[in-house]
Length: 254
Image (cartoon, rainbow, N blue to C red; front, side):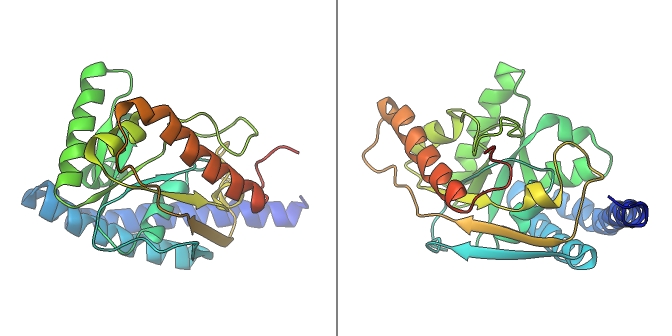
């Protein structure tokens, strides 16, 4: 990278980070008030506010989001949305992608410790401490209750960043167990460009450009039992992997 281009890239990242913080601080009072109205009503409002935040931030940093629908989700029913996890930008991309219905994401407990952002994220998501069995079980109960209220949930089945060089890393069972237990269909989403926009290796690698999300076909859980968890997980994995390879996702090693 040439010196001038490198300097401009550093300045752009500082600008984007400062803008991120300023917008978060502007959103914070609305989130604080909304959190007093409960996890459902307040949580829905917080999600709407955060979606506006994402719209403004993406616009001002030159990241242009586009949803691509292989098939459209049914707005009248809840889903378990699952997506690949390859970048810090995946989280705000949830807000840009899922605009047609209410949703709660499963987030890492550690994220809630981040000042301001952690409070906002924790107020609109279901947090889980994977190192604690009690907290894992509690988060599953909460996710099931969210689905019962007609609200979709969002889970990264890889659990953490995919650094394998493959299209996807191995999936955890959680999302697929919940799907079968609650008879909720799975709707996979692929984030194609977040790796190019913001590499997981550094929060100062942000670049402007396109940011696509691909909605894949719904995967039904009807008539499945807990004996089918692995088969369901593999089916979704294969579906996502095939499309990622078809789009020549940039992180797949040749």
